[in-house]
Structures are given as C-alpha cells and as structure tokens.
Length: 228
Image 1 (cartoon, rainbow, N blue to C red):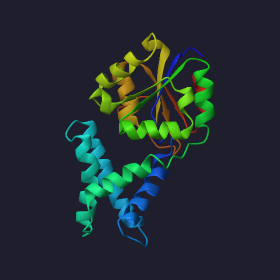
Image 2: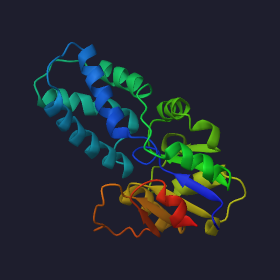
Image 3: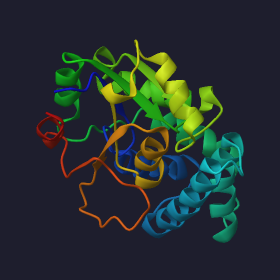
Image 4: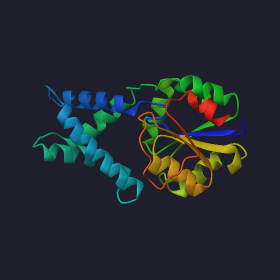
C-alpha cells in the first residue's frame, strides 16, 4: 500500500449517523412532552436539516444558527409550540451518547493506523464529534480530528483540507487519500485539493455529480483491497 495518510469522514462513513440522528430526535421530542409516532415529523426535520447543512457548507449560514433553526422551522411548519433552543440542547446532548459504528469501522481504522496515520475530517460540531469518537472506541487509532468549526471553513473548501494537512505528520499529497460517503463534500474536496479519494457508497448510488473518486467501495472492508 502506497498511502501513508488516511483521512476519513466521520458521519455515515465510520459512524452510522442516520441511526444516531433518529434516536436522538425521538429522545429530544419525548423529553419535550411529545409521544406517539414521530416518523413523519422526523422526515420533515431531516429535509430541513439537510438544506441547512448545504447552506452552511456554502457559507450562507453559521453553524450556531443551523443548530437551532432546524428545530424552529420544523416546529413552525407543524404548528408545534415547543422551544427550539431547548430542543437543540437536548438533541446535541443525546447525539453524543447515541453512537453506532458502521460494520468494519473499528477493525479498519486499527489496521490502517498500523500502516500509517489516520485522521478524521468532519463538518460536524467539534465537541459532539470528539465525544462520539471517544465513545465509539476509535480514538486509540486516530491521530487527529480536523473540524470545520475549528478551521473556519467547511468541506469541500480547499482551505479546510489545507488545515487538515497541517495537522498530519510530514505531509505529501501523493501519500494521502480521503475516504467518505459524500460526493459533494469529501470527494469533490479531494478533487479540488489534488489528492486521491475513495467513495464509500453502501447504497450503490449512481454518480451524476462533477466529483470523480479514485476508488469506490460498497463496504468498509473493501477499502483495504482497493487501496492496496
């Protein structure tokens, strides 16, 4: 294997964020006094949240605004008289405690850490991401965590990848590979920065974007075979 630096996205690459998100959303709404089936409300929240994260990644909204606005808008659209500030706080507290590893993540990071350096690159909330990494058991195999919150720029901005590279040991672009599930953030960012990439595509989606991955895998254990 020629790579020495493995830069992993966190959510939906190493950690099953969708599972954590749904559980945390349910816990939050129940703590605010709601009961019954929350599935439809959660789907609406997901759409609002996704649009706000896209806006954050293009620099049009701040992360602090996003964290509360996703709940304010969800409640407003559904006629719910609930406190979005309280919902945001409860949700983030729960999110750090609801960690689900994607199959093969721990073993993969352990193996790659023995071959080089493993770093995390994430647009998520820094304090929450660090707590989730610690709870996941991944921490012992990770050299550093680069967050957009600490950097000031988000994937796919080249400045974020420059920031992450400065956190690594002596860095050469030809020795590094980015591994992530998001074409528009991880793979496009790798293309713009000029390093190789591996698209983690468990749903076997078609790539109709401008992003061009160097490799594509459908499960994490295949990464070792693809990169060797």
